[in-house]
Image 1 (tube, rainbow, N blue to C red):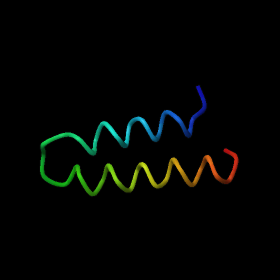
Image 2 (tube, one colour):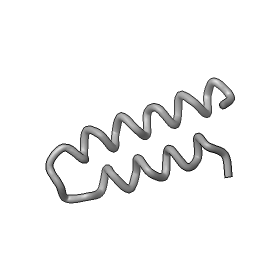
Image 3 (tube, rainbow, N blue to C red):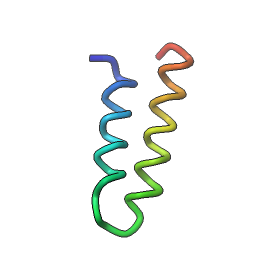
Image 4 (cartoon, rainbow, N blue to C red):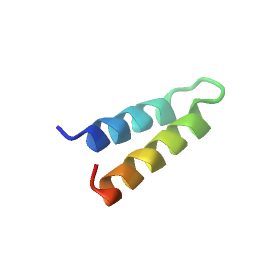
Amino acid sequence: MRISTIVVLLGIGLFVLPLPGTFITGALVVLAGALARWLGA
């Protein structure tokens, strides 16, 4: 599994947690993973 895939999956996990702040954090982590994948990491 690529690092970017793991980061995206972690972000999705954070995104769905019903805790304060995890919605925004999860979205940012998903964006970071998508950017890493786009840049070829």
